[in-house]
Each structure stands twice: as C-alpha cells, then as structure tokens.
Image (cartoon, rainbow, N blue to C red; front, side, top):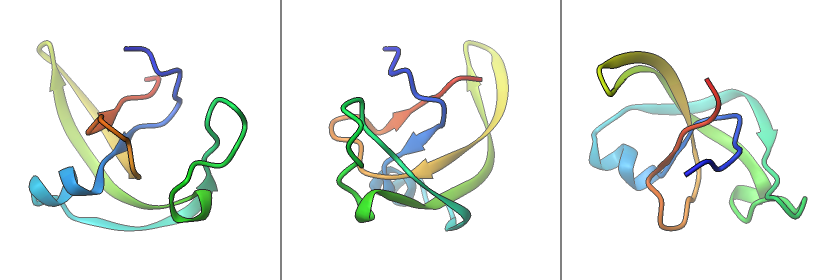
Length: 81
C-alpha cells in the first residue's frame, strides 16, 4: 500500500513487543493527515522515535529510523527512501 508518507512510523505497542529502545525526538514536528488536520495523537506532535535500525526487505538491507505514533490497524508505515 502506498500511503504517500515521507517518513517511517511505527506503533508504540510494536516497539515494546519487539523490545526496541526508543527516545525523545530532538526535532519535534507536527503530523497532518490528508485533510490537513493534525493527527489525533500527542497534540498532533511526533515526539518519540527509535534509533537507526537495519531492516531486510526482499533480500535488501536498508538503514532507517521510525517515528512512533498511533497507526490504527497498521503496525508500521514505510515512507519514501
């Protein structure tokens, strides 16, 4: 599914389930949904992240980071490379 996102996001419960460490973001940013409204999470501000990790997709390794927020039915959303 192409969500048109430019950043990577992950559900906090998934981070905890995978026993990943997370931290306060140094540079906070607001997140808007397609209607232009702020996302209904932490006042619309993304304030948590996990550090850089390596993921493997179809045999390719990619180093990325994830911002943490509520995602509805999705556990992760990958943005543009």
